[in-house]
Length: 115
Length: 111
Image 1 (tube, each protein chain N blue to C red):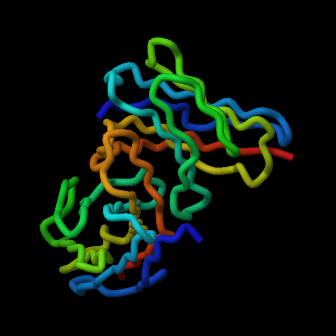
Image 2 (cartoon, helix red, strand yellow; image 1 turned 60 degrees about the horizontal axis):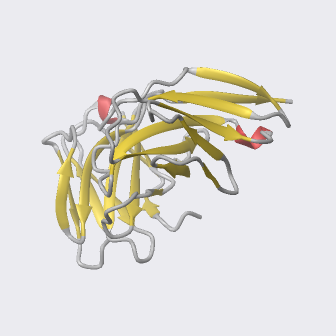
Image 3 (spheres, rainbow over the protein chains, first blue to last red; image 1 turned 120 degrees about the vertical axis):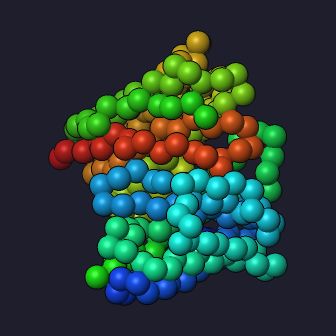
């Protein structure tokens, strides 16, 4: 158990629907990251939050949005789902931003299947 | 953040050392080298990181060349459980927001 909790583990839904993925960071970590991994692909960075504020965006679609709440958990909202959104979605967390190295701890992922 | 180049796949015999290379020729002076691994669709697992000096922890050793343009991850006594995809990533200090994850090296440890 890495300490980063993601729910649900598996999700099957239909095209056009909307889903919410949830992430609880490791205790004490202030930063949360979301990544998408499609079949046999590397991880694609989506978005980063630090202590409730958005810090950086990757190639996140406009249909996707995220937020980090005061208790530091984060949610990734995926709407108007398409078949191509089927993927593993990983959340990672890290401690407060430092001048030195910044190590990420990943959750087990949420597997989304869009039919 | 600098990009990295890794061989797509490697084999290693169980009990032998696994040496995984990574090229990062455009690395900047303040960028760290990180290694993670991913075992069959599980969440990536941090292994080790370094800036200039060689590093060692309970999992592996990291050898960084003097010009910092390449590095090698060493698993000293590979086991079957080390079969995974290994990712070499370069990123600036305190800034992981745009880690560029390539396809990594798929390491197969054979009995």
